[in-house]
Image (cartoon, rainbow, N blue to C red; front, side, top):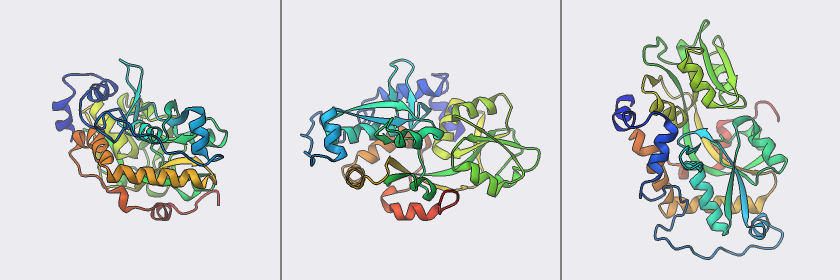
Amino acid sequence: MSSLLSKRWLPAIVTVVALFGAACGSDEPGGGSGSGSGDGTEAAAEEFETGTTMADLQEEGTITIGVKFDVPPFGFKNPETGEVEGFDVDMGNYIADKLGVEAEFIEAITDNRIPFLVDGTVDLILSTMTITTDRDTEIDFSRPYYVAHGRILVPEDSDIAGIEDLTSGTSVCTAIGSTYESTLADQAPDTKVQAVDSYSECFELIQNGSVDAVSTDDVILTGMVIQDDTLELVGDELTTEPYGAGLTDGDAEFQTFLDETIEETFQDGTWDDLYEEWVGQYTGAEPDDPEKTTLADALELYPCDETC
């Protein structure tokens, strides 16, 4: 994968953010608009019952969505435009279009996604968040809209070839509050885990040699490989990570709206366009089909561990 990505991008640009920003300027469907119409027209938004979250958002005219700002290709700030872009951002724009409102994006790192929902800082989270039973005790989730897989990233000259090589004397970086804190504790109990606020910090640490590896979702690691082709993904898939949109606990009407809207992206071709725009054209890999994974399926993958 490294050679493919470097041939296409690294000679032309020096940062992954700039890389994806250039990609956003293309005329391909799904590139930054979030709209599934593809013909430049916008249908009138549905009217919702007074008192529902959807009606309240329409009255306000905006929906505040928490996304990552440093995780290409799902959420990152384009340094040339200052705009936040990526798969999660386009999904958020699609949801906003269905409501007929503007999307306002704020940064939500792994560790503050749930607090932001609980305290009302955001209306919605689209921030590469894996659906887990523990998290479901605090918030609610939409049906899965993306399925990632856990992997390990190392320098190309590393002796680490998989999870079995993360032994005593090795160190691995991941994000505070991620599912990988428990995954690494279970699958590599002897390695030293360095948990940090953001994956951009993990990227810096592996580049300067402070850690031996990074472990997180494959799509996040792919962004790091594009940025630095001396890094590579190794070993088998560690986990399956179904992403869901996070919403306030108990908001059944909004959950139904989100489920129906996500289902519509599967049916109208928007999801396929977004995948190719943000992931497929870089990896050449076929995606797992999130339409085949239900919310119940996702919760079964991560049964109650800490809070219930």
